[in-house]
Length: 88
Image (cartoon, rainbow, N blue to C red; front, side):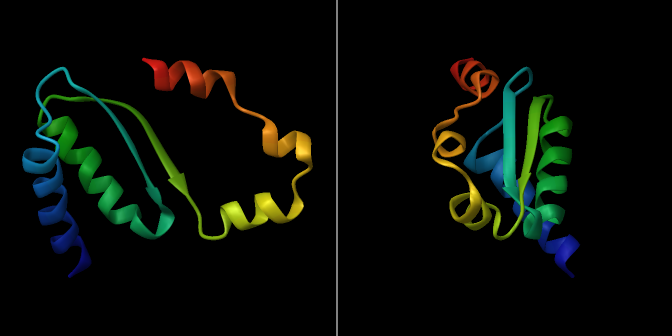
């Protein structure tokens, strides 16, 4: 049931909402709870001729752990590779 819904939703996202075209570069991110949908969006982007340059999954409680246990230095850290990636 969820796979069918995720397939349909992924097609709606890729074909209509985002309108991925051949050679488009696409960054996909989502919660691990949305793993099935993320997979289907990935499939639809590939079928549309797009280039998936990154898939990033977040797990429930990730930010809570960071904010509860990280030092000030860790909280201020910004990954330079992420900055370059986002610029492009």
